[in-house]
Every structure is written in structure tokens, then in C-alpha cells.
Image (cartoon, rainbow, N blue to C red; front, side):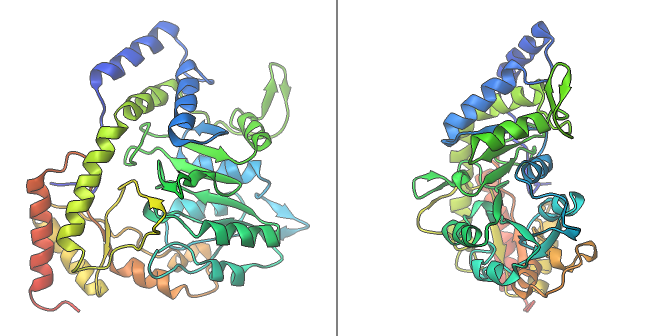
Length: 370
């Protein structure tokens, strides 16, 4: 079976050396030396400052909300944050879990990222923040979003879970907004097994978040505020350091897979439109078919032949009852119904690729599924 994703496993020999050091020091957590090393190396690799490592990507979002004053009620009114319905559930559920009502704004039909025009229309007196998503590593219209936030006095927290190493106009895409969050889940391009990070614009927000992720403790015998345990541990950091050492090879292999898909399928399906100033990371290869029926048929044909593709992101979150969406985001629903993400990982062979693209081409060339 060819999975849709496969965790990148770095050199076992190198990982063992890191583990030997952990055993020698017996320092497993609480900002250990490997966490400190990974923080410094990621800041250098990504070209950012004020990076904070945390235990997972969902906690990265929640800590960012808290550090930036987005969570909770104000004057007895529930606060709202505008976000996209075309994303993984954690983007919206992390808001809801933290007492903030997600308000969905529809996406652009070509980039699949949240539409700035729809953000503007969704703003109310209770809006506290905008939480856009760089979907599949594609850049949102960051200039327009930052300008809307400036005019309305809103915080911007970018869910950049897919945007590791993405460059926009020659700089890290992660520099935009008040904060950008990353997921280092095992299935991501860069991973620590489980893990995540927050990149803050301001150092003072970073310093507050550092205390928050350690129970709010400010000193050996003092607690400054309510906090949580969101720290990354040394075992996670060891995996991250090994994966980071091999990023060049991983990126090159994934880029090759991505290009071969594009050459074979680009004229038969809709691909995500990306900005000309974007340096992409080849983390995903999503395709959109003419109809939901066609997408489901192709997914079934792939599965019958031992290939797993994912309807990612389906369903559109505005159709999920617990989020109580008050408007119909029709573009997101439409794209979500017709999309498939194809397998993409560094070990995918030319034979695998040929098999996958042949199955899709044969499925599209057979009887009509429109």
C-alpha cells in the first residue's frame, strides 16, 4: 500500500548519538540543550527571530492566542476570530476550545486561501483577530490581510503549519502577522515526531509565551499568571535536529515528485494557483476534479490499486455542526468536495509515480463521472 504521507526518518546513527547525550545528561525536558540548539538552528535556517518551540502545532495556536490577548470574553461578549473553513480542524477547534468563536470567511477559488474581501465583510464589534491559513504552503494575500488588521485594530495569527521554509518576496513567509505557528507533526515536511513552534513579531510577546508554556512560572518560587505545560522535550528536539540536517535532500526529492505529478496531470485537473513571488516547499500535491463524483471515483480506483489519496480538506468546516457557521461559504464547500491530495514523500519511486498517474489518467479517460 502506498500511503498518502510517510514520515521522513533521518539517519539512525546520528539520532543515536543525540540519544546517547540525553542519557548522559539525564536532562529530558524544561528547555534542555537540544531544545536550545534546535531553536537557534531553526531561527537561522528559516531566517526568523523570536521562535518558541512547543509540544505540538495545536498548542502553538492556543499559546499564540493567549500571548496576544485574543482568548476569552470581553465586557461579557464572546470574542470572535475570522478564519477559513478550508483547513484542518485544529485551526478552528483551537479557537473554540479557547473560548473564541470562529467566524468563517470564504476562500479564493484559485489560491484556496482566505479571501481578504470576505474577511472585511465578516468583521464585527466582537472580532478580536484574524487567523488565516497558508493552505498547502501557499501564501495568503499577506499585504491585504495585514492592512485590514491595521485599520481595524486586530491581531493576526497565521496558521503556517504547511509553510515551513516557504519564502515570499525573498523572505520567510513566517515573518508576517503578529505571530505565525508551525506544526512539526510526523507527517510534516519538517518534523519532531510531534511538536510545533510559534514565531512572534515582537520579543515581548515571545517572553510572555515562554512563561505561559511552563505553567506561568516566573521564578523558583513565583507564578506570574495562569499557564499550561506546552514545552517541547529533548527527545522531540533530537529528532528535529536530525531531520533538519537532511532537509536539503528531503526537499530535493519532494520537489522532483511534485514536478513529475505536475507534468503528468497538470492539464487534466485543477492545480492550486501560487503567487509569482513564492518559493514553494513541495509539501503537498492537491488536485481538484470537475465534480465530487469524479473525485470519489478516482480515490476509489487508487485505493483498489493500493494507493491512498486523501480528501484534504473535507468536509469544509462551515458544514461541521459544532462550529455553528452562520453563512454559507460556497467556494470552500465546492473545492473541499472535489479535492484529493496525492501521495508525496521523498521515498516515492518513479515506478510508484507512474502507477499513480496512470490510474488517475485511466479513471479520467474512462466512462464519464461528471
